[in-house]
Image (cartoon, rainbow, N blue to C red; front, side):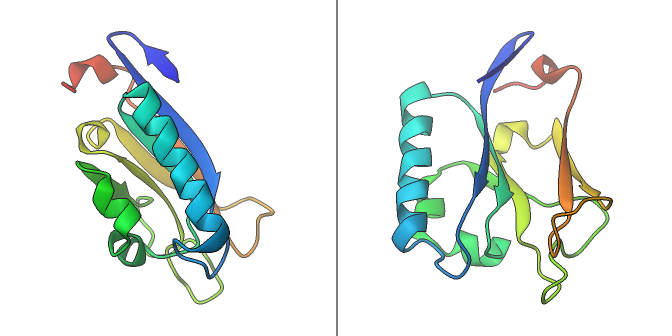
Length: 130
């Protein structure tokens, strides 16, 4: 849980297994994340390697249950994985945070074939109503 002046939110760094979408091991991971979000009842940012494109994630039952969620992709790029030039690394967040949170690519990493992402949060998040 991140606490800032006037607001608190949950920040989760996560990784989903390649090729499973919301099945098998990923089903367990997504259920754990859902349980955490339900328990704390706070706005959230889930950032990581989803190993599925944003459009594939939007088609899952899991995403449909996240009412009011949106997907944020890194600024200025169209893909984050050089294998197939696909967008696999991004953030899912409650819509009320989208105006004070953004992602930028970090190109100088050793996480090939993926690039790193830097998550930025406005210095005045309480300016935004949640």
